[in-house]
View 1 (cartoon, helix red, strand yellow):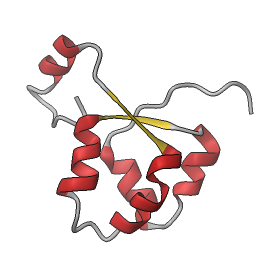
View 2 (cartoon, rainbow, N blue to C red):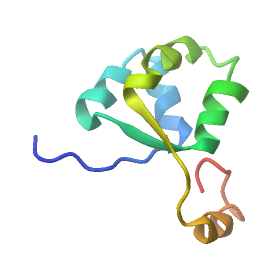
View 3 (tube, rainbow, N blue to C red):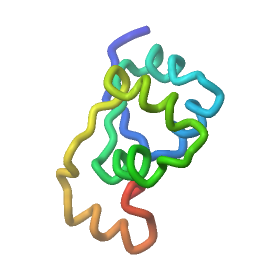
View 4 (spheres, rainbow, N blue to C red):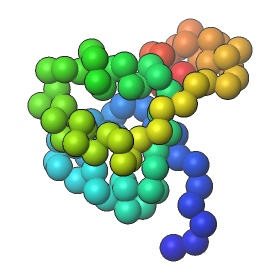
Length: 87
């Protein structure tokens, strides 16, 4: 499989894989997925009504690493056209 790389994700793939109960695929492919705090907030707080919420919660600690955004200037610029999680 080769060396693993850092994978950063917005909420959409996580929501969709959770909806089909296949977050295990992401875990097998990538090990861990980095998300910014904005994605964590969207999935764990704002997304409390998502049908996939329980599935996300059950895989969260073994699949997801929440990271601070390092390049805040780039993130701020991207937020002109994207939501916080995508930026």
